[in-house]
Length: 180
Image (cartoon, rainbow, N blue to C red; front, side):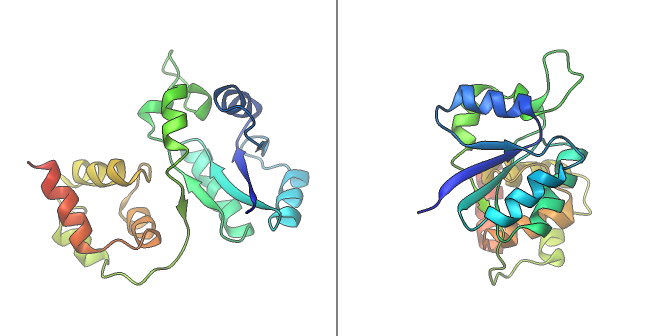
């Protein structure tokens, strides 16, 4: 079994993870401008590690996630809620601001990119009220919180639900549980 290597944005994120989880292996990409030497290291050593992307839930973090996911073969993802990642002064968003207890909990919710046959499509999401409706944002939040896949617009939601191999029935069950 390969050793896990957690990829984060900056050195502060690394320090927090290492403080929170003893012995965790991390590497920082150096912020929104991914360092070439780090990218080169990851590409050339991805067969030696199980790579897990643990990036900030903001625009730069998602951009880094997209870039790394396109360059690496099958990294896993961990998604944090934006609210849980906001600094005390409410000016910054980052993994470094997440409570240790939540980090330890979320570390177990890895999502792997994979195309699994599912009955989900954009029409299904519309039918379930997850897009194009007044309450769609709130319903998507119920789904994203339940499956720990981070904030999503409709397109990203469909992609991540497909990675998990979820069906319409799965979503209905979660949405019905939320309305109980």
